[in-house]
Length: 536
Image (cartoon, rainbow, N blue to C red; front, top):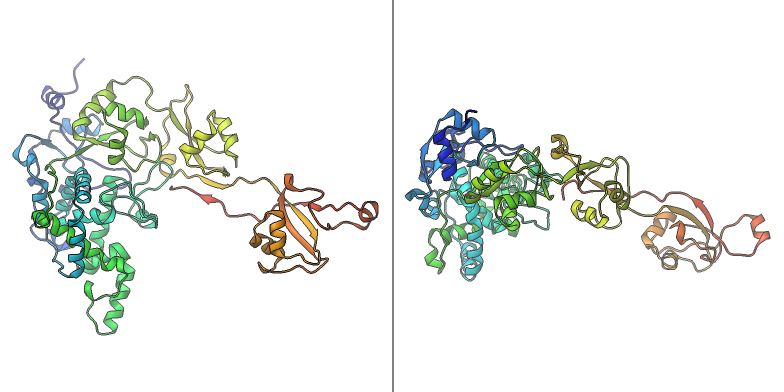
């Protein structure tokens, strides 16, 4: 049988000098440098003479159609930004300090005020923090610089994740902004960042970088000023436009420093300027930057079948923590080929992973997607799919006392005879909707005594006063008229024949017995809205 790989290409693959090909990520594809016109990028972003991509550690370019076909067929790892490039890690360009390249691309106007000085002092007094932040950022910096240069954008923007997340792609703010570039859920969807139970592309290193730079380019097209564009990235373009309109109406300047804005936005550009100054001249602040090599830290490896995360970690020969730093978008213990057709691996591990994956004969995935046919309690779901309830809750992030609504998608174990991967429709659009798992409530009608009030009834029956008030159309501190009906809802097991002071009874019942019993009418309590956890 003829070997489909030419000897020269095989030698390159085995030697670890990898032939790289065209890359696309999920539903949001980053374009290669060839897809951008330098002149168009310059006019769109306001930066002229952007450094060329040839500053990086590439030595040759290949147009070999066989190599491209093999790579597009998921044979080998791929450099996300440089299709058809062979990398020599021993070259002088690859060994160069990436910080030099970053400094060379600085093109924004400088800001010089007391806020900048304050942030400079803050960073200078925390050298350990700066070292951790720059070391973490070194994993992603090469890719961001490549992307910026291909678009003709100023390299100060490569420092923005320092401000947004300290270069932590798993960061989540109290306002639910997520990822290295801190996208809010709605803004992420505007820029094609998928958010479902299986993945959150706001945390995807490649997809979020593409989206952030798309957004910044759009903002620069609106404002024509990088400081205003950055303010809009932080505060929202509508807010910046309204602030400018107010100043214009009052005859005031409309530049960044002249606008009335929240303190966070007021400090946003000064923070970036302080980091820029620190990177430009670290010795001036008593800082030492870690060396960041001028070549990719990671490569993109195609995935054609679903594979457990722990299996991918083992085949790659890396730790789970290292895997998560490069693939933080994954919410579950399985990688779905239909939704995540590639993973990122350290440069030194990518080629080994490809060869081990090709030689692997055992099942790759032990999980499948299961759609709830009806609304079910988690214990019933666990019994049906053959799974421990505690593990079911943990894997699918189901809080206590919640049940699964019909149509929800859960991750459950595969059986031995199930080999189908999760379909694309589920991988991209699966949701899980929960509702409170409470026992059926029954309507209980009581007869009010002389001193009965909403707070008193609530205390007596262990209820929220607001609910008692709502059920009886009274104020939360209201009182009941003696003899009036009091309506409450309780679980059937909580209803006792001796639980009421006076109960509503028919005359016949009244004559037959002097026992104080509640009149119970089976009725559902007013429903509460279900909880959606489609993108946790």
